[in-house]
Length: 80
Image (cartoon, rainbow, N blue to C red; front, side, top):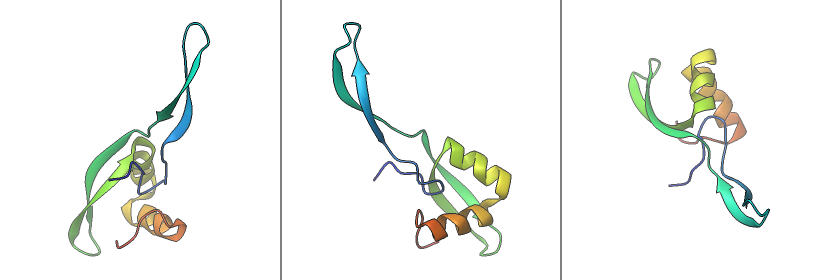
């Protein structure tokens, strides 16, 4: 499965490992992802989402329904 947050759309970034001698090699910076279950009271069911730490904070702040609605509009999550 891809390492993309379903709420915020965060995904891996590309950067460099820099050694002590300043030699650079390519590397990836991955988002801090978790698989969490959330309860949707409108649909009376549980859903499982792959969300980043920032996505968890966003869901806590705005609520699961609002966060999912905004994620659908931006195209980060489908079929929920």
